[in-house]
Image (cartoon, rainbow, N blue to C red; front, side, top):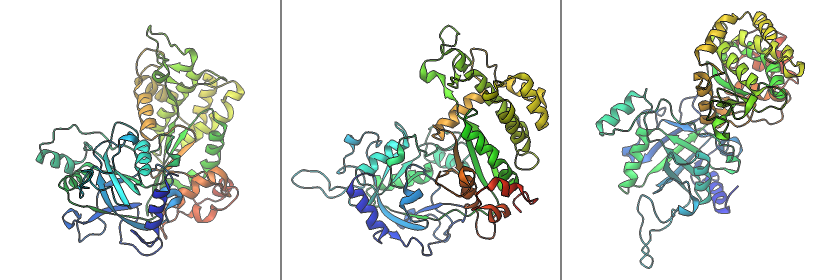
Length: 465
């Protein structure tokens, strides 16, 4: 936690000085959206006043504890917002008497009055991590922070048209930034959001014209009716990851297409530790592939063999991920067999014969996967590998630094103790994202059970019926 001023501001908000009743009825917005952001003052910035499901496109950040434990599960917050005149990256440079809109000046000092609590801050993205910006905003007393995106997503036709109208020649981005923790955000306790470019530009323009803006934020637990998405970031050698996969496989099967799974893997960027050799020789020896570019530090076995296995699993998922049953059963079967028979404990990790047995067990065509791996870039050459390069970029974008890390609809799974252990915690998070009347059958049957794996496997109901 930070200053007592920040805590007092949040306490005032939650007691009625800006936040609506946490458990009362709030303005309607889409059931599958965790948050809704709009402007009521000035009304000229309000989005679609006749439709409560509208608002400012945004992404709710997952930095810190605000939505995990600090705020009630359902509520609202109205805050005056100030646009800072720098990037929020260096705490000593944040001047509470600067920024927009302008306020009355003190005749003696010539400086404007400080931001009046409770308030929110807005700053452009870039130059440092989202966690650093959020931490610094909280340190100066902000009750929330809004990051303004400065680029359109290339697929956003509306944003592109707005740019053209304003003669904005900035390049677009293929996807929006992920507002995630960089590993240092555990002490942040204020809510944080990314506002998409078009909406952020409108608010910034008003603030720069010295118009006072009151931002309204409303939140509730998202309630999906069809399906949720979850991503597992895994370490192929980690025993806890192996155990989690083994225990969760029956649950994944029972959830079927109601929970859409994406596997991802934690490897390391060798260029950050000077593993890339200038002479075409891997400076970190057997830890990396591609002349030190993609690494897995291991004292047990060859790290390069682990990276190759990661590439193999990426290709198996690309060819068999959820294509028939929404689950990707061949991938789960391959990984389950590999972990049981081809692990480092058996000294057969990466052994060709054992890998072929795993292929056969999962009914996966070896040649198809070998071709996929080769097409992405040879692992023993001094060149980039397309699929591993994408994996590293996604790892950085999602702020992943430990395994297992699991995101359900972009929110991290909380590893609090549950009756079903880690598999139960993942299941609880997934099931909790469904609305009343749309909860998968396996959720009502198995949540709270000590062995959710055995429970999910004990019935023939699959596919979330």
